[in-house]
Length: 396
Ligand SMILES: Cc1ncc(COP(=O)(O)O)c(C=O)c1O
Image 1: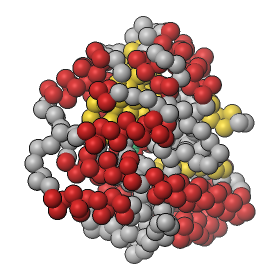
Image 2: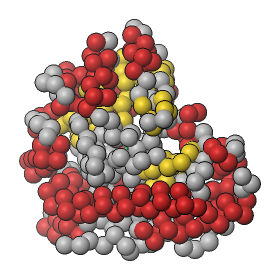
Image 3: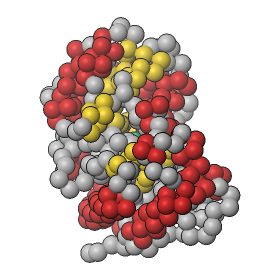
Image 4: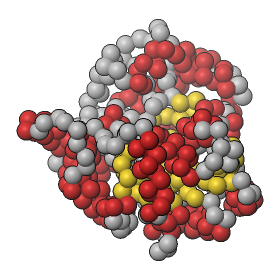
């Protein structure tokens, strides 16, 4: 059944974080501009989720509720079916989001002052969570080579050997550079971490969003004991546009580490999730695979459209291949603007509300991230505004 990926939802004045951010950055933004920043989709949810939730509300009492067998079975089956990742129900620890889970995992797997590895440019809450918990950010930036972004194994190994380095927060697929790390790349990271007793917070929130031609491997499947060395952070929130449901499954195979994580949540009596979140997750994982497949094709074709448009009209802007996620990464450094000037250009001249590269770390300066989970008409209008503003304001 073909789904609707062309209607543009009206999210103005309904509490959408992305829209509020746009009006804060430019209160004069005219009607009809769609922001392409924060990672949720400008698509309506799958009809199976919308109808399923209506049906659910009609016969349920919305009281305190734990995850049902239906919820846990859906998670277990999804990981097996989509990712060839065989997990046991009892390995699943629920969380009201991956970012809150990262904070909990940091607190229960390290001490104040310990070092935590990240590879910038990377999703900015990683560094923010490390700092907020009084740990030390150990950044080993990705290498930008003629082949694109690569991991700096020597740097990661040297940092992992430091006795104070206790954790690595790893992003796969990588937000914002869009890489889906290969099996060989993952094997090297896993080996370094195991050899140096560095526990991995494996953020795989985007792992269902793999573009045609690429293959994602859950790091925990690399070898039989791999899962003992990591917490695999998963959720239907990116894949099915359910971020507002705040429901994620953190898969922790090691019983002691899992107990510590659950204990961390219990300290603040966060014992269960929102009842609608469990059901939305169950509906997504059991009924919405066809919607997801079509959604991936739309995102992939949006990325190809942008790449072709830039190549033809603004070849000085480099687009990085979108291997996974719906967030594409672009190098604007040929314009020679400071990060502040590039942001001003975007927000005031091009009326494009993207994520500025600098928020992902110093290594992101001069780059922009665009969210391509939106109807093609929105992407086309965004590119047209970018070209017009570039021709008006930029001297090459
Ligand atoms: C890599 C990554 N992790 C986590 C999140 C957010 O997770 P949650 O909304 O479940 O806290 C995002 C959202 O953009 C993300 O890109």
